Image 1 (cartoon, rainbow, N blue to C red):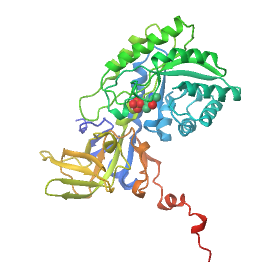
Image 2 (spheres, protein in one colour):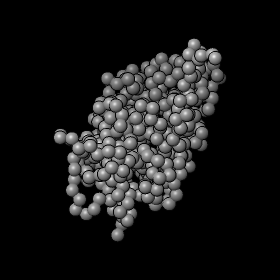
Image 3 (tube, rainbow, N blue to C red):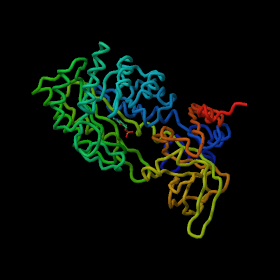
Length: 433
Ligand SMILES: *Cc1c(COP(=O)(O)O)cnc(C)c1O
C-alpha cells in the first residue's frame, strides 16, 4: 500500500507507519536534532519541480531563472544550479547568494524597481546576462554606470502589459496602477532611448504580472501583448531582440482547487511565442519551492475558551508571516497520524507573539492535537524563511534539507549571544570604572 499522503502535501511529505516523514526521515527525528520551529525542505521535491518545468519547455530555447526571493537558502539555490538553472535576483544580496551557490553570471537576470548605482556596478562587474529595467531614470543611471566602467549592460525593458492577474492585491504587479514596469505605450520611446544611450544593449523585453496566479487567462493576454510589442520593435523599429522574459507568478495549491497547471501555462507561452526566434526566459519562484517545504512546530498549549479554542505553537508570524500579511491559508497537519474515525475540531492556530495578527490558521477544522505534539505547516517552502524576522527577539528558525534517508541542517539557529552581539551601546552609555 502506498504511504498515506495528507491532503495538500506533496508526496515528499507522507505518513509512513503512522508518522509524517520528509522523504525517508521521520519529522520527529528532525525536531529532536534541530529543535522547533524549523523549516524542512525536500531535495527530491525541489529537483522534480525543476525537472518538470524544464521538460514542459522542451524543444524551445529557454532559460529558467529561479526567482531567489522565494527561498534563497544556499542549499536550495545549489540544488537548482546543479540542474542548470539561472537566477532572477532583486538585490546585491541575492546576486551574491546566486554567485556563491554556483549560478553562472551569464544565467542571472536582475529585476526590481529600485536598483542602486552600487548594485548595478557589482552586477556589471560580475558579468550578468541582463538588467530588467523598469523606468527611464533607471535606464539613464545604468547607462552612466556601465559607460564609466567601460562595460555594456544587457537590457530587457520590463513592460507593464496592464493585465489584472486576478491575484491578491498585495502580489499583483501588472496593471497600470502598480509601481512595476514601463507602461507599454511609453515603452517604444524607452526602447529607442536604450539603443541610443552608451553602455547599453537592448536585448529583450520582460514582464511579470504578479504572483500566485490561479488562472492562465491573464498570462495569455499579457503574453500576447508582450509578443505584439516585441514584434513591432523588431519589424518596425529595427531592434534586434534576443530574449523574451515571461516572468514568474505561477500559483501553487494552498487550499482550493489547483491553480493553473503547468501544461496549460506552457501551452499559452508556446502559442504566443510561435515564430519568435530568440530565447524565452522564465522566472518561476513560488512554484519551484512552495510544496517542497514545511514549517515544523510543536504545540505548546491548547487553550479552550468559551468561544474559541486556541492551539498555541512555538512557531509564529515572525517565522511564517504569510497568514498575517496576505490572509494566506496553509495546511496544518499532525505529525502523528490521527487514528481512524477521529473527529474534527475547529481551532485557531496561533503563535506566542504579542499581536492579534499572530495567526497561522483561523477557524481551522482539523483533527484534535494535544500539548507537546508536533505539527507540520505545509506548502511553506516559498516566501517562508526568507520573510522571517526576529520580532520578539525570537531567533530565526533553522532550515533542514532532506534527501532520501539523510538530512542536514542547511542554516542553523543563531544563538542568543549572536543576536545580542550585533547591538552596540553608544559611547556615553558605557560607564568607566
Ligand atoms: C517575485 C518575482 C518573480 C517570482 O514570482 P513567483 O510568484 O514566486 O513565481 C519573478 N519575477 C519577478 C520580476 C519577481 O519580482
